[in-house]
Image (cartoon, rainbow, N blue to C red; front, side, top):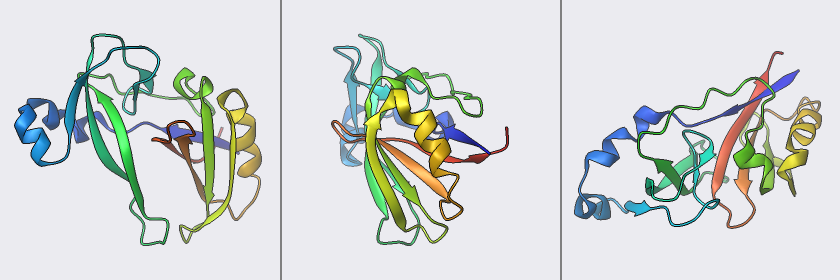
Amino acid sequence: MGFQIHSLPAEDFAHLFTLSDSELAKISVCRQVVQSKPGTPCRVSMADAEVGETVILLNYEHQPANSPYKASHAIFVREGAPQAELAVGEVPEVLRSRLISLRLFDRNHMMIDADVLHGENLAEAITMAFECEHVSYAHLHNAKPGCFAAAVTRAER
């Protein structure tokens, strides 16, 4: 049994880049120009934005389930970002290069385990986690500063 890391759909955010800064501010979203790399991980392309690129910073509900763990957090999306098409079992560099909080959930959307590990060890940790039949899916967060990184599901190899 493999795993699939999911990027967020570009079409969900494209409209934000057509809004003015004042319109974005009204919905608690802001436009930024990237000043350094790494540091601005795009959730659509699953890659760090380049210096000088425009990104949108917004609050994203990554855990919408009716659960005590319902949650949202800030994410970045690059303007014109290509949609990441990750292969089964692929861990992109933007995750491999960071300290990651791995959170495991059951089918009732209750967190049943968690760990913090370096992204280089993520593939092995996810694979081992999905060996437990009670683990339905996982969420990944950057442990520093803590933004939502990606959702992970089981996948056939």
